[in-house]
Image 1: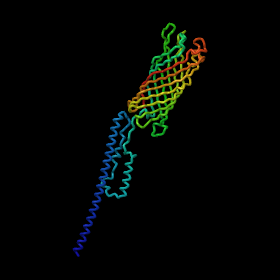
Image 2 (image 1 turned 135 degrees about the vertical axis):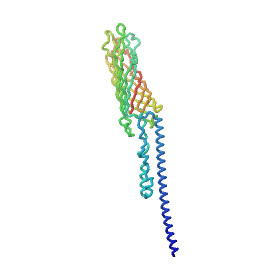
Image 3 (image 1 turned 60 degrees about the horizontal axis):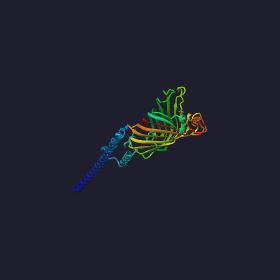
Image 4 (image 1 turned 45 degrees about the vertical axis):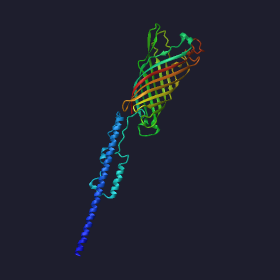
Length: 387
């Protein structure tokens, strides 16, 4: 019996040792699993870091001019602390605790977590700018040419052909809702303005002795427009279409206070007030270069002195305007525009309506001057800031 009792205790001790060995094995397996999970998470974190670094290199190559801060693209602290339950202290956490840890880990790995790479904004373009302001120089020449009866001879109206004169041009746009993150149609509604004024312009006439006399002259234009900007697609290289309608004034006046005695200036002043519905198309050739074209119809409400009864009288007045430009984005927020403009206003005079259109030959019932074309042709270069 003594031998049997000894064997029973030996068996019990052996079973006890086996139980402790099993527990040790399970603990080691749990530790190895925790180590593997921690290693896998570190590998995923390293992969994410490498992806972020690759994205940064690509963005820097494409957007060298992007001045937005890309240093916040990745939260290093969260990446370093992405996993903190792989140590030996938590080897024997219960299953419920591990499930809670896994749930929190899943939440941490959610796409909206701060640890995800943050895509920094690309540079603002004319396609997406909420606010833009352009300042530059212009050079515009004006001609006012009349059509008249060939037999008028000395009674024919004077034809005005002005040289190109320098000017200052300022334009801008504000899309109030485009600065936010919303995607509604309201972000495409904007207000536009443009101002252009000549510098040092003069008109030359001849006095009675045929000596040249220069008269101070002023050309100016301004307008305010409501616009809707539609961007096709989502890339910076996709086209944009802008529909607008505006209220405008355009004037060309010659100071006649110092006209020599006996000299008649047969060129009336004009002061147009008009509404101009139009369309503009912007067609990018690359992310930095784009072509822009705009056409407008001028519904002229007032024309100024030229349609007074002592001048050419009441007439049918219509006009069109156009603008073609090349845009070059020199930096993240800076845009250079080089363009050309044309504005043409046509007149159809009526018999007996004006002294200068019907009374040149002494007969007010005959139409001596049938019409006129008031044309402004020129170019400009501007530097704009986009926000």
